Length: 170
Image (cartoon, rainbow, N blue to C red; front, top):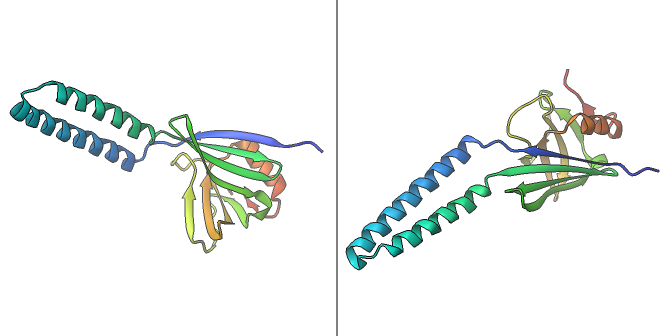
């Protein structure tokens, strides 16, 4: 029997909330730098402290902004689907791991199926596309709806593994 292994990367687009967070962090950084500059000029009459704080704020903001650069990696290995979240192209964290045969069902996002769930997770790009699907499963003892964006290879694989539980777009 041959082993089946597929993987795919999906980049998450910045949301409005991400953009507002970046703007807020920049404004806070500017206010802190201004306060340090005014405090340093009045009390110490020293220019070195504001320069050090400026570099600290700059590198701190770069580090925080890098955590808003997110990619999701879908890996399918012999019936197991793993979803990893990759921050700034170097920090990886497993966010989902489960057996595909344990899914209640899988459907295209346009298919409205009645199903009660306690949690919803979006591991896609953040935009609704032709490849946006969702599935229901019990993950960590919680009934969960997971949204993701598999490519055509993954879709054909899921159709073959879940023949009666896969609902494609009409």
